[in-house]
Image 1: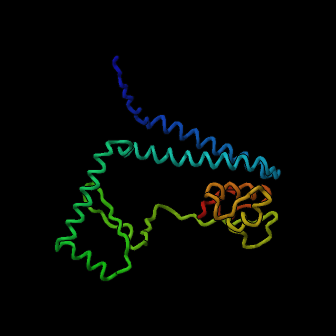
Image 2: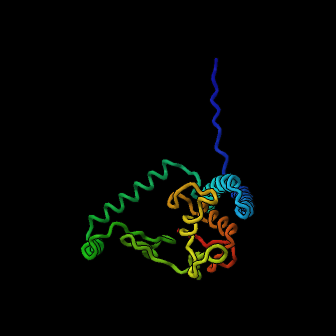
Image 3: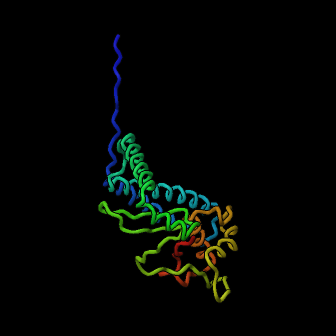
Length: 219
């Protein structure tokens, strides 16, 4: 009696299929956002809770698929694990050997000048060091466009002239619109979804947003 072993190779990730799936997920998310606004306008708490959970699940899928597409486009999706481990070990060995030479003295000088530094991120491109993006936890901010101001909600039942931040809005009105978690435990998507629903129900607008009911991203 002979036994055959069948080895099934992993199916390569198709970037175009992934992008199509990502577009469908984003369309679905936007559709549920519109439903959430409508549910918030009539204070349908049960509907809002259901939609909020569905949107949170879709947001997770979007994030994971976006990262997978990026890895595939950069040629780092999958690959030989042993080769990656060997390359990482070789890189660490090179760094270890470097710190045993006199050429590493400038680095020691940096540590002497700023002893609290714990991490330095080196930007490498085309096989050369391009610069440093992080030193000691202070991130260099690269301007990519006009920075949008934080959301500030006013109008309707919100009588404050200065308006409320998204955090203040959700904390003050969230329970009324089905928000059961503490603000700190909400994801960014959940915070924005709650703000949109509350604004629709309370007749408020974000005076810093490009559109009246779309919140800017908050931290």
